[in-house]
Image 1 (cartoon, rainbow, N blue to C red):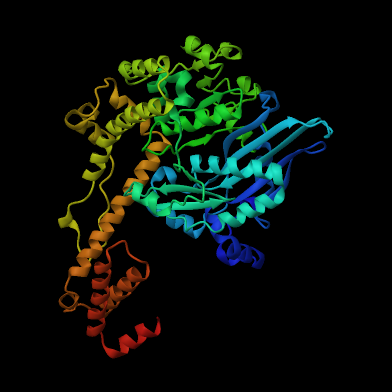
Image 2 (image 1 turned 135 degrees about the vertical axis):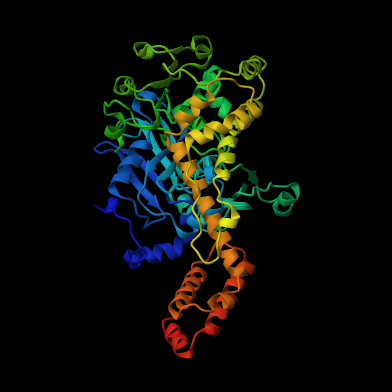
Length: 559
């Protein structure tokens, strides 16, 4: 089936190559822009896709169509915005892969999912058969630039509703002139007469300055200064803020959570806010900000089993109340004013039909920090701006997450073999194995209590964390970093060595083997500084000098 194939470059058709050549810059930022309408015979149907020639599988088209409209029970009149995620088998572009190497983890191009930013309009129109105009515009991208793309769709969609296809064509051509997708830069992104200005942080993370803004501001062009990924965590969590620490633990340990709300706007905002609670640690398990009964993964996520999948689902259809009643944690949103008084932590799932609240029997490992909860509740009473409340939540949870992760980072660093064990003439050593019990032994002297006043069963929380995808993804990245560092140190030692001296008394086959290894290293762009690369090339020349002429000829013939 087409949707299951992973195409390599030599499988790309001439038509696809021409599309990539024409729309390469657009494709790095967006996959496509879809227009979904309601057809009396077909239901939700794909009306058009921009730019023409974009490849989508039938399954992707089907999922997009269903995700582009709120459930009928939501009763969303007027304009509604929300975002979705759906699986993709298509590979990332070369530029997206390069961007990911330098990007911060939470902003990397998504290798397994598309992100969809939806603008849905429903209004009365007596001239239409059903008496209503219903249409959605959806931006499909691999980039989790939530704030930026919400602002872009707010500009593009109304223009399309007013002016038709020409506005989407113009928007695609504008986006195709955007700068190269790269981390660590200020970007100007023109669309339909407006310029969005933003900063894409990299792993070294710089900051946008006033002088940067002054250089690019023009009084004749409206600029919108947009954070790439600015999630208003407090607004989404305000009605469940009393359970902030409970939710942090559930997300950290990748527990299955279902968020039930009356609109996709509410559920997608809360699901996204939940995944941000553990930043800067990326949430590595599956999550769907808005999910419908028509999704191709419906059976996978809802089948009755002993352990529900590690997924955070945002839903609006009441059907999920019974379908997901076996899930261990449910957040049901209701009217914000009633939630503040009725919010409670209970395990009686039968109440789900009526009462908003957090439904779970989970017992937290750590105690709640009552001081921050009191400050946030006082902020609600005094109408403190949500941006300030969000900053307070972010700072508190950042400190909590860092207190949890710093001992792990310190222990991982200790797994690095001693530099004296690195030989220029042998394969680099591998990091020492991760042993949970050895790690726990370090906590008495260098545990979370050094940076956090929160008490509780930290070791129990670590044990639970070690079983999750969040830990697996973090450990894989750190282990890979250590391995690369050891490889780089071995190459630096090799670059500084005297290979002419080393070659004395060596068999010709050993020298040839070293020549071939050096050639392979230099060909594969080793993770070392330029001066080390230059020295490695000189060591290769040194070895070529000691080889007999006939062997040089044979080796050079193979180049």
